[in-house]
Image (cartoon, rainbow, N blue to C red; front, side, top):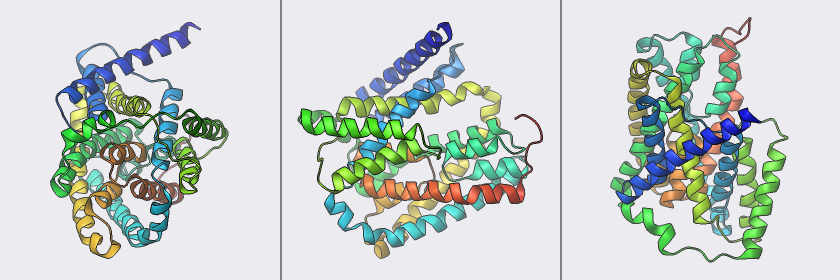
Length: 355
């Protein structure tokens, strides 16, 4: 009971720190305030104080359910009608992800002083949960893998809204206030149905062993509801903001496992890789857009090699075709699940003892 209370208290303080950072960013009209503000505050406190932010694993799973449900609301009948046009961009995303992974692998091997196993897992373009799970089964430096993914993700989260503001002309400060300026009316019946489906999806997900199932199953369930017109409402703004704070605080809390020296050693290289991959995603979006019949901004978000929950939140916060972005990131996760075990077996050495 004491351990449980301690975990809940630490989690509550972590959320409080993240919320304070999010509110600060919101008041300063900075982009993606609830995500980036909570990342910044949580990461900063790990390096400037003895407190080590940490969230109970179940709290992140609840946030994943909320985000999956939010992403599913974007699959309206109109969106489903044009889903067939995504084939070109989905193929481009798959090829681009392969190129990104090979590039990052070579960089980490050449300049990161990593063995083949660690470089392979650090280079994966997303899918941190499955990457971490498999990394522990091979002779990898798992902490370095997680740090590389986290540093790259932070770079992508910072660069994405700024580049989108440039290419799409979106007023980010205005986007911060959209959810509050015209909130959706609460409908007990409609929102109740959405909540029941989300809870049922969470319950089913706890009994299914599959990477990112806490995101994928609610997304699929919500998408079916909205595609068929059975439900038309969205997740209320306060829950959306809370989910963003949980995700952001969780990303920032990962830095608690590292000293500043470790962050400098691997973080700078991973961040540099992130910058190159963001630029590559932007160039690819411009090149593919004329053939895919889509806009550059959602393609850019779809091609960024980061976490599906985190970049899904970016698409939701900026209202940039969340369904299309989600579909691309879900496919990327599935490709990583399919390919990574084979690649790891080819280049890696299974652990002979406990990780």
